[in-house]
Length: 416
DNA sequence: TCTGGGGTCCTAGGACCC
DNA sequence: TCTGGGGTCCTAGGACCC
Image 1 (cartoon, rainbow, N blue to C red):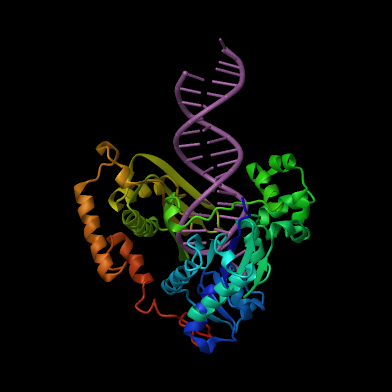
Image 2: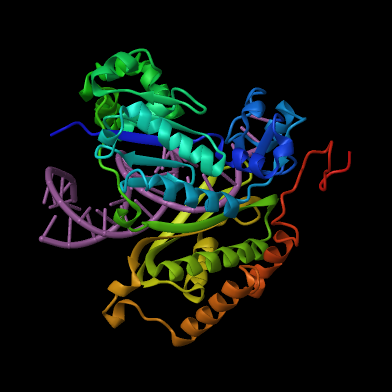
C-alpha cells in the first residue's frame, strides 16, 4: 500500500481578505472583521496589518479597539463569505473529488491519486494556490503530509500564502522542538496539564509514557501521544459521506444584561422558532431539548431533558424550552445570553411508527405557512409576537450593509 | 480587556436495573 | 440490616475547533 498524501488548505485571513476584495481602498490598513467595539462583540478575523498591533481572532472587539484604535471595523457578512467559499470548493474538486470542508475557509484534500500527474507535491500545491488566486484574487496556505494531523500542523507553519510538506520520514525531526500547542486539539487547558508533567515540545510528548498521560487526560492522552508521533487519520470525508448532524441550536447575547423573565422568554421564543425552522429544512426532529443561560459574570448553566417523543415544530419546542427555563433560571439574576439546543436528532423519514412522532396537524400547517413567508420575504418577516420585540429591534433596515464603526470615520453608536 | 455563535467529543456522577 | 459489582441511561459541564 502506498503512502497517503493529504493536503490541508487554509484561506489566509479569509473574512478580512474578502472584505478587502470588495473594498480595495482599505488595503494596507488594519481591518478587523467582527462585532461592535463598543458592544459585546469579538474579533472574527483581523487583517495582518491589525495583527501587528496584537489583535487576534476571538479577542473582545473592545480590547481590539484599545490596541488598535485606527482600525477599520467591519461587520461580518456571512452570505458573502459562503458564496466565495462555495466557488473555492468547486475549484478544489477539479483537482480531486476527495475534498472535505472543515469550515468556510478550510478543507482537507486527499490528493494521493492526483499527485502523480504532477512533477512534485509542491507543483500540485502551487497549481491549486494559483487557481484560487486567478479565480478569486485570494491567497491560501497549504500544508501537506501523510495524514490530516500532520497536514494541519504543516499548514500552520508558514502563513500566509505558504506551502509546507512534511513527509512521514521527516515528521519526528520537524516536530521535535515545536510547542505542544501547535497540535490541533491542544488548547490552553491541556497545555497547562502537559506543562505540569514537564512536557513542552511535541518531541517530549511523543516520548512520554502513555499510561501516565491516560491517567490525567483519559482516552485523549493516548490520542495525543499518537498525534505527537506523527500518526493520524488518513481518510477524508466528502460532503455526501459526512455523518448527519448530532445537534442543532441557536443562542444570542443581549447588548445589555436582562433580568426580566418576559424579555428572556421572548428571546427564547425567537430562538426556538429559528431552531425548529432549521430542523424542518433538514428533515430532522430531536428527542433532547436544552436551554442555556449565561449570567452576568459569564457563569453558564445548561439545563436539558430527554422527551418521550421527538419534536420539530416551535409549537412543541417552545413550551419545553419555557419549562426548562423556569426550572433553572435564578429569579432576578441578570442574564447576558440565552440559547436553545436540540439534540438526539433523527431524520423524520425514519419515523414510520406514528406513535413516535405525533404531529399536530395545526402545528404543521402553521409552520409550513410561516416557512413559506420567510422563504419569500426573509427570516424576520414573520414570528411569534413574544419574539418579534427583539426581531424588530435587531434587524435594522441597513443591517445587511457593511457598517464602519470606526469613530474617526463614522460612529453610529457613541458620540465622541 | 472581558469574552459570539455554530458545533463535536469526552467525562463524571447519579439513578436504576439485574 | 447492611451491602456488591456491572451495565446503561440521563444530565451537566468542560475542552476544543473554526
